[in-house]
Image (cartoon, rainbow, N blue to C red; front, side, top):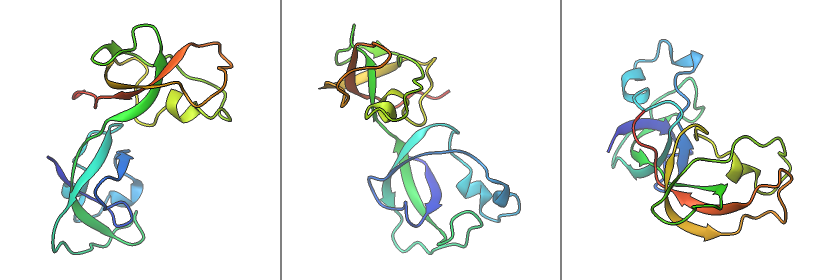
Length: 149
């Protein structure tokens, strides 16, 4: 599992994040090699916080960073219902402009590529919306972490 540095507020097993890459404040940081070592746009989950690790100063995270182990994370999403069963490969339906919909975060989950296929780990049932404004027939699923790009 990769070892990296994350903000202290995020440094707790089970917390997930999408790695966004280098920020301008990282340019002169002495810890950049330990911190900028993940794949941009991929969702990760903190699996372990290093025991006895010290909080390091950071130009991005106001309360500093800690060393943690991470792994690529599974994530929930809405996918087209046709062919949506455990073990099958699916792509997301595509962007949705309806940001006020209770399913929007599942139709456009952070760190997901619409042009990529993902394997369904588990079907979870109906999406949280009553109806889809784009008339899509969707199923809520748990998707496996993406493979390396």
